[in-house]
Image 1 (cartoon, one colour):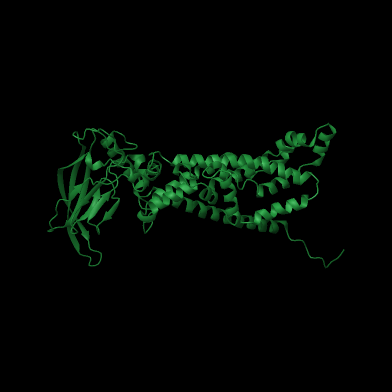
Image 2 (image 1 turned 60 degrees about the vertical axis):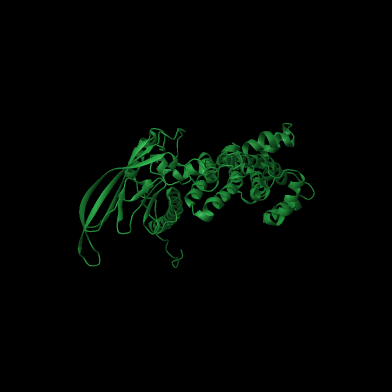
Amino acid sequence: MNTTERPLRPLNVLRRRQLAVLAWVYFVFIGLATIILGTFAIAFSASLKDNPLESPFRLIFPQITPSVWIKAADLGRQGADNPWWGGFAPGGELVFSLTYAAPAGVDLVTPEVEVPRRKPGSGLAAAITTTFASDYAIVELTGTSDRFFVSTEPETGQNIRWLARTFDYKISYSEEAGDNIWIERLPFTALAPRTQTLLEATLPVTRMERRGRVASWNNIAPGALGLILNSYRRVISETVDLSSGDRLLFKWMGNSFQIAVGRVILMIVLSSLAGYALARLQFRGVRLVFVLVIFSMTVPVQVTFISNYLVVRDLGLLNSNWSVIMVMIASVHVLLMKQYFESFPREIEEAAMIGGANRFQIFLHIVLPNAKPALIINAIMAFQGAWNDFFWPFVLVTNPPSALAMPVGLLSLRESYGGGQGDWSLVLAGAFISIVPVLIMFVLFQKYIVNNQVTEGIK
């Protein structure tokens, strides 16, 4: 026995170290997940705001405040008998209150209020709008009430006595309008001198204009869901085709879905056939073919897009979904399928050959059914890549507007709204709608991503 041999470390010490390493790994992953989900949550909350670029960024705002939901639902019921989506319809009559404050002794004048002649939206929707809420709304001052309160000046510590006056306005649908149409939004503005401050209102003000003199509301009859999901409702109703007036958002999603499904089908067919041929068939030049496949994956699409564009143009497929489906249908998927088929037991194929099956029958009836996990994972990757693909739809499909894919449609949405007007809540809403299909795909097939049951498929 060697007396100089080092004693073994106690098992409990090694166990503690293993647990410490696992704990550190766990907390690192929890931190990364928190950062990613936190960024996602902030972006989603910004899509609900009227001004997602506000500074400082508020975590509590009207769209997520239950007390404001209740008021919005009541105003929607008054305006159009619809507490959920609101609006302004024949028979509508709602009461909206404003409270202004001024130091005691300063004249507190009645603000000048109106329903402005404001187009219900911007960009594409505004270009074809002919209906204005101002043509149907009648505003009347129905009463006022006063109260006094005392506030402390933060700099001097002096108590100041203030007069607060509440103005109640009735906004009713004009019976003389004659059209009897439903109006989605009822804007409202109030102009007051700088000597008096807007203390509160039935609904929180959307924005202050003219250096704080004008309080402006985009819609004072939104309904509960109309307040919360206003950006999402707008991105659906305001993305329209100027020539036909048709809504485009769901057409863009339909085009992207067709492209994604078409590319997935072609990918499954080509990558499975090519991967199996490279993994099992022995022919002259098989290594060269494999090297060429690897090399093609290293070439950026921007290098070959001119030649591809000319081929698609000569085939007469420009401005069609087929032009986008044809490109990038194999690439890395061939390599993944090849690696899977190489891990498939050859003994099963040899047994099938002894039974009289040919190579294609073996592939179709034995190998391919057992490759379901690999095919599903590749299909999910291909669907996600095709759905989020921007470059090829942007190059190959440019006209008409209804033929655009979702990512290109979002670009036109940004140019229409975000470019000059800063309507970024609409752009964020469109972006979040576009990720819904990918999330559904992940939820439905996440078990194939987390746990690849290859061995069960072989059994």
